Length: 195
Image (cartoon, rainbow, N blue to C red; front, side, top):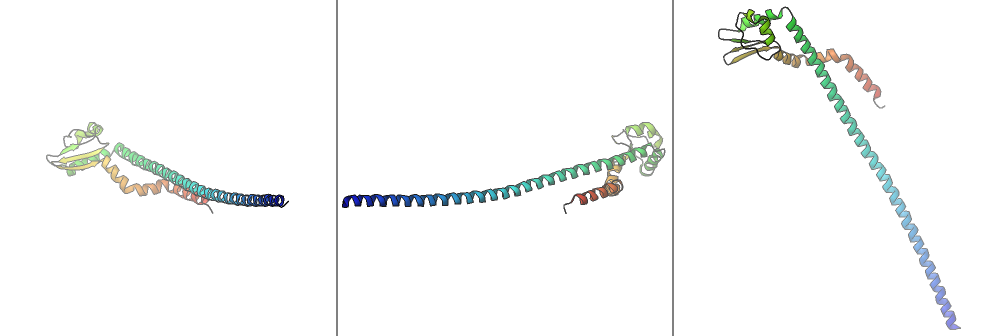
């Protein structure tokens, strides 16, 4: 019987060891599963945070580009209005009854012998012969006069005067034309600002 008892003991020891191995395997499996879940949870949290930060950055860049584009269009629109105001003022100046006299006065004061006087096509037709000088070939200007004395050119064209007026008066015109709009925009920005 000793052999049977020995065999039985070996079988029992084997079963106990197998149960212990299975228990350790189960514990290890649970530990691995727990660590995996913790890692997944951390990755998900990190991923959500990274995604949130990246989404906010993308949204802010998009908002910034939209504000920049809006401001560019607003500025272009304002310049168009300013240019239109200057253009209308120059057109009214050309239509003024005193315009031919003013041009004649500039020519008489500044043109000398040997000078060539150039007007626009329309001005040459309207009053070019009444200047006291034979006008030269018409030039592509809106109005005004260009006087050439040899290599020297005196440019009193309305195109040049319009550019000067635009440069000098842009700020004043913008304040006059857009003062109420700017105040309204400022109030709108303040109202929509996060608190």
